[in-house]
Amino acid sequence: MTTLGSKVWDMLHLIRHGGPALCNIAITNSCNATCDFCNFANGKVGRKDLRWIDAEQLDGALDILHGRGIRYVSFFGGEPLLHPRLPDMIAMSVAKGMGPAVITNGWLLSSRLDQLAASGLRTVYVSIDAPW
Image (cartoon, rainbow, N blue to C red):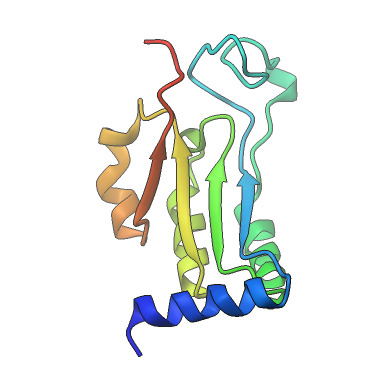
C-alpha cells in the first residue's frame, strides 16, 4: 500500500474507533509578533514567565501519544520557530512515525526552512494575522 493510502487507512481506523489522530503542542509562550488578540504577543508575557518545553520530556510524551493512536502533531506557541530545539522535536516525531506540522507567523521561516525540512517537516501553516 502507498504511504498516502496507509495514512488514509490509519485515519479511518482512528475515526471509527473514536480516538483523536492529532495533538497540538504549545512548545513556547514566547513570540516575536504583537497581535492585539493574542496572550502570547511580544511584550505581554514577562521574562520570568517565558516557558520553553523541554525536548527530552517531549520525546517521552510523544511515545505516550503515539501509543494512544496520535499520528499527527502540530507545534505552535507563541512562535514555535523561536524554540532552538524545534528541528529536534520534528525529527523525534518523524522517528516515531508521526506527521509533524508547524503553525507560525512566518517571520523566521526563510532563515530556518532548510533546517526544518532536513528534520522531516513537510507541513507548515502560516498565520496571516500578525501585524507587519
